[in-house]
Length: 180
Image 1 (cartoon, helix red, strand yellow):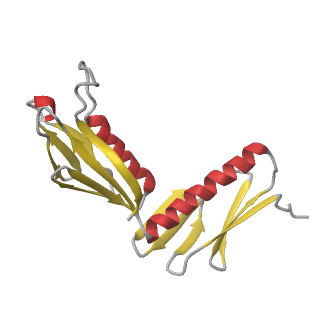
Image 2 (cartoon, rainbow, N blue to C red):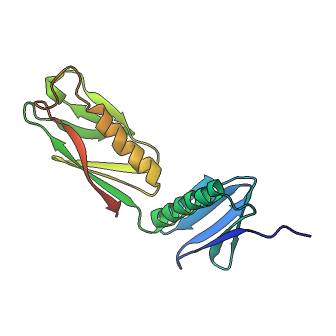
Image 3 (cartoon, one colour):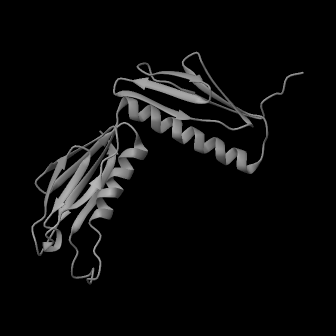
């Protein structure tokens, strides 16, 4: 006698999106690219049929319901990433020394931050594009976690140390986030 799923959730796929699940890896591809992620848990079973992703759970406890919600949110973000993408906008703010920014390879370079001679650098993760035009910085990509981590790397590179942050509010800050 086969086990019957206690919790079942179906995620429909849009027309331009295809998915496959093999060896605990979910592949989702669309017009903006392809994303893959490992989904494995002994109490969950994943399947892709009839243009939808099905998640089955064989136990019904609070932690399983919470984990199911997490899996669904990750899959929704993957689908949104391959269809629309993610775009964060950042603003360069300075009052004392003009900050100059540019991109070299996979490094975001911040020059003249608080009058420092050596430039500060932030890592740009793979699959993420960064554009710096004047005081505006745009970060785009298909993977929400990589785009968010790149934005965090840029913000962290401009943290103010050994100064009063009420006076020295210089830095590069995220002003909006969302789809492209």
